[in-house]
Image (cartoon, rainbow, N blue to C red; front, side, top):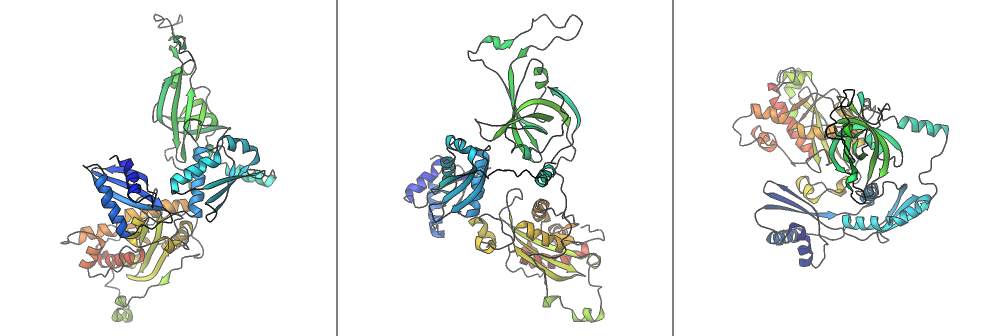
Length: 536
């Protein structure tokens, strides 16, 4: 049986009760991971899940190790809105619209408000039926999509104030160096972000970036005549005045993508007799600035630039979007630290005498925030933070605790919940990452950041902190590295193993604040091995 037919077999086995669909299949070595979705409203219990897994394994081709994941397609207003916007961006980029509403009780009714002038466009493109079909593919349920017409959608109020605001928003420009004309005229305008260009259908734009996926082909005439290639005499290597003769001209077009830090856009360029030589110098990785008109791509979907001019350039060395960092918030807004009291930390003799000789030198001079995260997956690029737990160490003692769930604004997969126990209900009323990280940023100021395998946790803090405008530029120490260098004779270096070896109790593993407390206690015991500069 082919892998993509497994869901048909599952649906026949269960009489269509779950409406299974294959969302993704990936291969890593000899392990094939299948993600199979089932419709919202149905319950796939543990025993049934095990039964279906065994059934599926018997149907699949031999020779691989299979990892089968069953994921429910939750239908909520938020995820439907995101799905509709994604579908429109891909299928109908020229559509001027605003998202209306979603009525789950009325046949999964989705209302989209579109500009009245685009009524014929929406009708000819079958906008309602296409979106409904795509939503069914995504959520395995029927949807009704209705387009309401309005003259107000996309309308711009022409006031001096709004024009001023618009002029400040469109200052997403990039400075490039050494611009040299390659095809057509030298481009003198500053390029804008590709992210902004994607929305300018029908407008002239200038963008820059690196070329990817370059392909070229001859332009064929209707009759595919040989006259499409205009050849020069073979013996004419040089002209009468000694200059090189023109390169034989072959009508060609070039398709490629250009990518900057903000996005990627497809391009097409039709060469002429005077530009063919320059166009042939293009290659994947070429740094270019180009101008042209943004058009709807009728064949591949989305938009593309019908290119007029191409210049070579040198992109900035630090080719990233400039970030305007926010300052430390004056007050906590939604996540409030609490005093941390632990009887194990109380040493009456030390308190009365003020003796800190038993405190590691590094901890006498540095406040430390030990933190741990729970996330929806392993990659900060496409996974979300769902819990932050942290404690602050001052003079070798844990003095404060910081903990909060974080609303990822998406369903938490069942497989993820099995690891940390966090469900959609836990996070539904929690702050979003922008608000949670604002308070966590305040909590970490003037402190060293510590985590167990800090590279993982910090990748999320850095990625989402940057999105929120907060620069977590603290010094860092990896408690895993500290343990690896200084704890010997253990079978592995998992946090639980190291905690046990040092007499530290780890309760509720894989919950952020408890992992952070255990890591902090391990860190305090091993801090004597850290020098004054924080080197392990």
